[in-house]
Length: 314
Image 1 (spheres, rainbow, N blue to C red):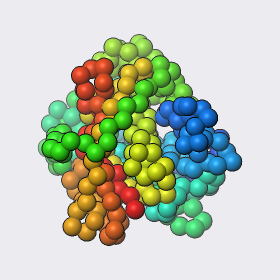
Image 2 (image 1 turned 45 degrees about the horizontal axis):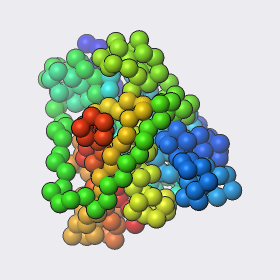
Image 3 (image 1 turned 30 degrees about the horizontal axis):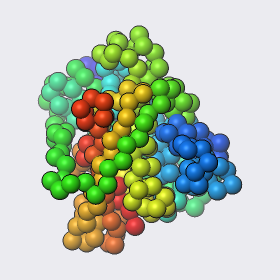
C-alpha cells in the first residue's frame, strides 16, 4: 500500500534550521500580488525595506517554504505520485503579534493525522516554528491524495463545502492575478511543476498550469488586512482555509468578507475541530474579532476557490 498510515504517524519529526531576511519577505509579497500601484503608501509597507511589515502568511514560505505538499511525500510510509496530490487546506496560528522581518528559527514537522476518505487519503502535516525567544507560529497543511484510500482507517472530519453567510458581504474586493504570478510565487520555494509545466499540469488533469493555492491564500489575507484591519498585519492571530477550486494565472479573484463575533467576541477558534484535521491549538483568548471569507473566480461565474476561510484578529 503506497500510504502506510501507522508508519507516517510514527515517523520522527523532520527538524531543520530556517532563516530569512527582508529580501525573502519582499519577494513573497510581490509573489502574492503586492506592489500595485507601486507608489501607493499602502503597498510600500509590503515592498519597501525601510517600512516593511510582514504579512503573517509569509510563515508558509519562510526559510524556503514549509514542507507542505511536496514535503509530506518524503515522510516515511508515504510513496505516491505527485500528479495525484492536491493541497486541501491550510491553517496558521501566530504565537506573537508579528513575524520578524529577519529571523533564524527551528522548524519541526511531522504528520499528525492520516484520514481514509475511501477514494482518497488526507494527510495533515504540522510544522511548529520556534526561535531563541520561544514559539513563533504553528501551521498545518492538509494534503489530499487521490486513489489512496480504502484501507479502513479513520475517515476524519467532513470536507464538504460550508455555505457562506446568508447576509450580504460587508466588503467585496476584486484582485487581478498576473499572467506570470505562479512563476513569480514559486521563487519563494514551492517548485511543484504543476504551477509552471504545461505537460505536468495536463497529466494532473488541468488545462494549463494553475496558481499555487498558497498564493491565493496569501493574496486573500492581504485583501482582508488591507480592507478590514487598516493594513495592520500585527492584528492577525490565526488564519485557516480549505482549497475548493483552482485559479489560473490571468484570472480575477473576488473576495467577499463578513465580520463575525461569537459569544466571547471571537467565535470558533482558527484551527478548531470544525475546519478539518486536529487543529493547531485552543482558544486565542477573548476579545478577538473574526472575518469569514469566501473567494471565487470572476471569469468562471464565481467558481469557488477558498471555502471555510476564517481570519482571527485582535
